Image (cartoon, rainbow, N blue to C red; front, side, top):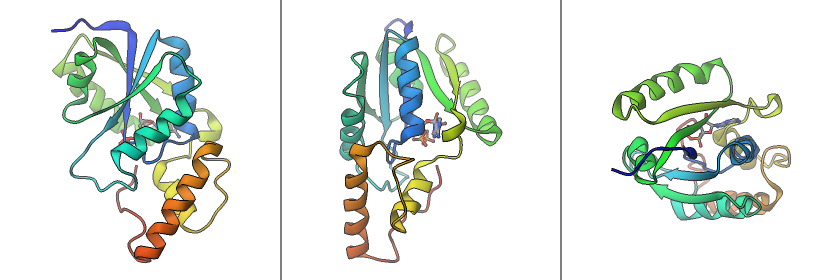
Length: 179
Ligand code: ADP
């Protein structure tokens, strides 16, 4: 079994799409850890707005400036993915107390599955604590200003996808799952 290096962290999520709240956690994580891997989850039960390849590409665009950050995809148990990389830390972002309950049970489960892997939480900056990918998809669908939520490079990509979806099916533009 690969070791669990405490200097190597993995930040898992759906990132559908990556937004400024995620990016803030990535930036702060990249300063704390020697190496930070972003794990884009492939969940067959979810119908994402962007494919896993698109989500990874957007992350790669916004993470170019961090020399110790890399982007990968994974399916199955996150803790197994973390271990396969030789990482010792799962990095998570916390927005509000409402995130706490879910994150708390997730981290206890992961601790049971692999006691050597620690979960480290970073509190969201106050200006991003209301932000979620689902909110951004809704704002984009209604033509709202995305500049305070998305990295500038990703705004045209988001707008193009919304237009494509609108063209295909006005009613089915927004995937139902919250995140
Ligand atoms: P999922 O909830 O499916 O794991 P997300 O892409 O929504 O995936 O979130 C990935 C991680 O980023 C989670 O730890 C989540 O709490 C954190 N996160 C999401 N939005 C924010 C935000 N606005 N500020 C800080 N962390 C966030």
